[in-house]
Length: 79
Image (cartoon, rainbow, N blue to C red; front, side, top):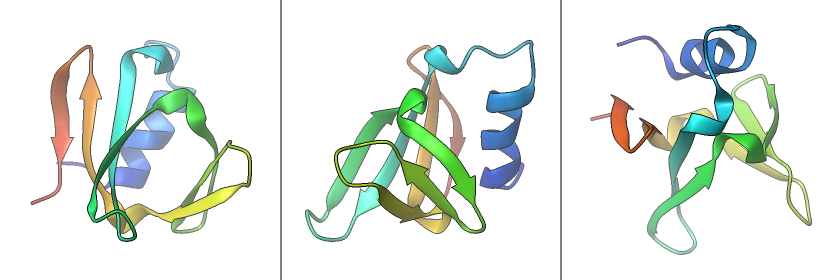
């Protein structure tokens, strides 16, 4: 399985991919649960973080991403 930053960049830059088909699942330590967001919520990748485009810009470490789903099928998972 490719590293998560490779997959996220592929989704963004590969013309064969449609980012609207993807969802990202990351672990929220405050809520102690997995959070699902559409790929479109990712504003940018910066180092080892994804920056989310929400009311107050959130920086989520890439190691907290646990799963990636495309069209309701898991295509990447961290064990």
